[in-house]
Image (cartoon, rainbow over all chains, first blue to last red; front, side, top):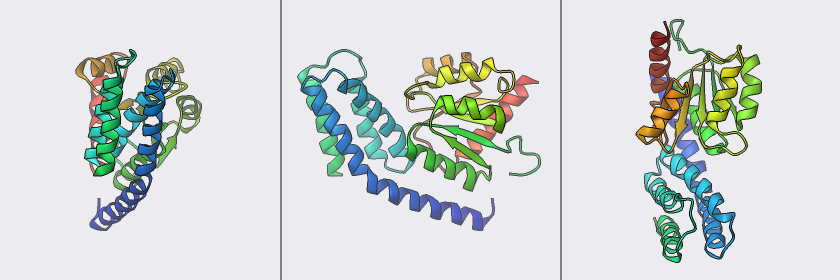
Length: 103
Length: 134
């Protein structure tokens, strides 16, 4: 790869990172809403939240947002048992969203 | 990409648009490969027969048709049966990696990945896979 091509790739990567950063808040909002629905008894919300957390865990770190990826991975682990969650687990998952947004 | 590169064209399959964007950049802009990015396993199976990519990067956890089911369909078609498939997953415990390899995957790449080195990892997996197949 030539120096020029590498510089162009890094520029393109920076553009993509900026685009992802602009969408990250909306992804947390979506996950937060699913967690609240799950905590409040919507039976489909846990699986949907698990899927969204799994996606974000893999995606955020690839864009350089490692901390966001770790918060999403923690939520994925909390939801991943497949069993109904205790209220404390929902609270922990929601706290991860709060912590991620605070970064 | 050069004449001796075993990879000339890549197909990328992931339902997450943001993963498709950054992977496509990594494979096309860094790797130098024409890259076809699709959002579903079914579309990948349909397009692979005509596009004939040299390697397919396949997300594991997708709605509709997951990665393992997509791989099974690719293996069932003689036209696509021998295309190396690399799974990309945010969950790659050793037992799962073994399961993916046993199902016929050429390798497993864990998400998150470094976009500046993804193409080199893909190239190394394909070279190793082709060497093992000879």
